[in-house]
Length: 181
Ligand SMILES: [Zn+2]
Image (tube, rainbow, N blue to C red; front, side, top):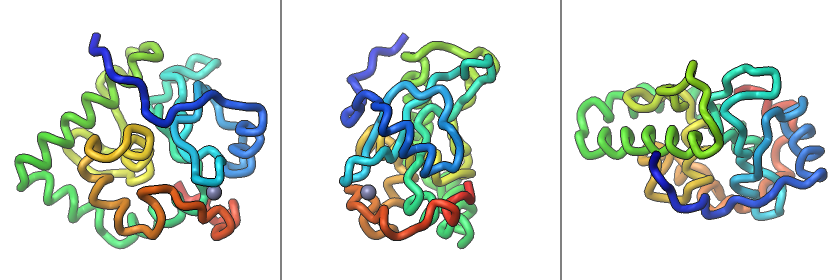
């Protein structure tokens, strides 16, 4: 089993965080382990979840973006056809595709720190290792791990004002508009 350095921004979950995530998502966030990254205002931005929920359901997306304004911006970018463009780029650029594969392996190793769910053993998130299918999942990993880990998210996040450093835009988007995952 690979030993990884600790997630750089990870902090414990408070009762307030659970309440804020309920507002952000419009439902209870399940399987919460910790807050992997916070908005600059302190609200949860990426939540780290267990590979298996309390009821036994496997939950492969272990670095889950909860921040409504960023969720909305990423959905807008997904609607532009950028995912197909980047998938194409992966097929043609060997350095990019090997870095993306490394991000996939890291995603699995990171999740394995929390336990195993054999049904999703080789499944990471967001289309990794060969396709780009969900910017939210890729951004979740990139924001939790820091730059230089997920090369596709590192190309996508700079297109969104304030995303890289999570400058607070929590006043921007009403939660109900962000329910487009
Ligand atoms: Zn904020």
